[in-house]
Image 1 (cartoon, rainbow, N blue to C red):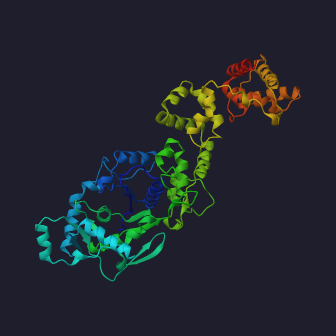
Image 2 (cartoon, helix red, strand yellow; image 1 turned 90 degrees about the vertical axis):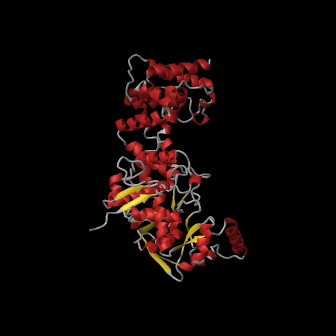
Image 3 (cartoon, helix red, strand yellow; image 1 turned 180 degrees about the vertical axis):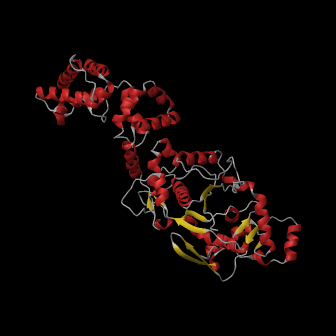
Length: 492
């Protein structure tokens, strides 16, 4: 019987979900689902000093927001395990005792002061910083005496001598490391908590994880993990180490220089489908010229062997492009529904404002969606539809269009007002507004821009906004006339 494929994401609760972690989650999720397997989330919280309150809840919120729901996770209704490592201490104590009994690990009574001195000496001599194995060769009597004296201790792995650790990385191929280059790592700390490496291996084994897909920074740790598997005579999982994500400057993404929190992209309300689509392509080649994939299509097409070894560049401009394409192609009703969910969570005051007249808001969204890349831009692009504009006379003058003084501005605004005020014109459709204005401008022997530039500014008082005739359609005749009159009054 073939073993069911199980992947996992095992973060520490130390803050926000990094954009690189999102890619790791996504690849684990896609690989598991592609192979009819299971994807789980567990929390590696053995380092309690780094715990950040609320980070677990935030993590689960982020994964739910991007639709990457684990099959098993902490505090789920059908919980199979304790998924917090801090709740599994008895398990680790049981397995560390087994290693001690089988002479695969040993007590280390060296103080932190001695270890610091040893490290400094090695650094001064340009030697690798490794434990010198002083406690590895203590006799049973010496160990018993020190335990009887209640001396603090750690427990270290007894790394075999003169062996070569070999493993086949699903992305990078064959990797070999000699045990002479591997330290006798600490497995259990003096406070009784396991180290990351030990707890990681025990949990992966007990939870029957078959494939460990993680970032390339863990490549040097993999031989340490394999040694722990070997010490128990356990079969290690298969490993795949993902390339780094870099910024456009080809430097590692960092909090200081880049916006790397996934939640910050949710707050800007990138279309989730676009975010997942873009992240999937950062380092993975779908072997096609297609660029747009649903999550189901990604599951069908994903193959871990097509992940690149080289780093990938996370480019927000490219993400903007993806998100803009998704917005432009989305059904108007579905798009408006998503917009309301966004505003209800991130901007309640604006949400209340647009829900007072949803048909008006839908009409605005329909006109603006071709320009939008993110939902936070809707408020930016539409604020002049909901607020009375502040007068900026400097924008009215445009010498390139031969609008050189306010007398010319008044002349063409008056023409626009008269067109709008004509009783024989309903001007209820974009086509009717366009035809009426173009015809009137041609009859006045003027160029379109000479009339439409001051008209657009009068309606929006923004340097950049939709076209003047689009604004008339969205604002309606009455409000458009009011704004033109307001500007004309300031120019008297």
